[in-house]
Image 1 (cartoon, rainbow, N blue to C red):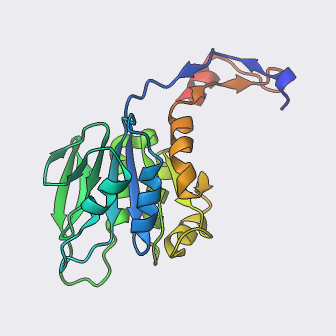
Image 2 (image 1 turned 120 degrees about the horizontal axis):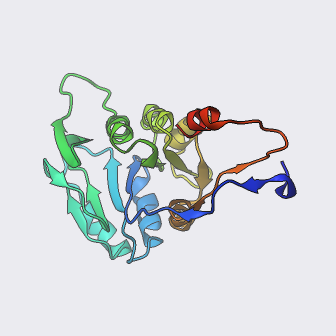
Amino acid sequence: MTKTSQKEINQPQVKNETSRIIAVGASAGGLEALKAFFDNIPESDRNSYIVIQHLSPDYKSMMGELLAKSTHLPIEQIKDKTEILPGRIYLIPPVSNLVIEDEMLHLIDKPKNQKLNLPIDLFLESLANFKKEKAIAIILSGTGSDGTRGIRAIKEQGGMVMVQDPEQAKFDGMPQSALHTGLVDYTLAVEEMGAELQEFINAPLVLQLDEKNIEYDEKTLTKFFN
């Protein structure tokens, strides 16, 4: 389909999204990636970033203090029933898993008699159900496959998935596992993600159809838009 044969059915409209909820999953090697990621997010950013990282419940996490050196955005450790505010970074506590329900962040206990805990999958699935096509998921450095099931849920609802370039990741297990699904929209170095996020969120919505090749009526168009 060439540009000369396309007709714009409606004029471009900028998305009226003042703030999106962006889930960022990371594991081994994730601190380095997170610091580089947030170092390239401007202070004026109004999105809400929910960081889901594999953390040992036996040790106090220094994530907040370490990330504070790479961002001007306020950093908040999540408590049960935390309200999601724009322009903030939310960190999961080491002893809990996380879901989003009723526009709030809810902490739940980690499974005690289960070796495998997949907190990224758990949160992404709840985010997909809550935000539908407006959900955004980012997978950074880490071992294993946590996040893979979650991004499937995100894509099933029409959301967007961004993954750290495995060649840059300190541990490429999670990025590679995500890429193997064939569902990833962007594969980037972490330094490039902030600019691409803004481009995606603020991109104009344009529907273009080739009238020479498409016959349509009102009923067909209604089905298409739905």
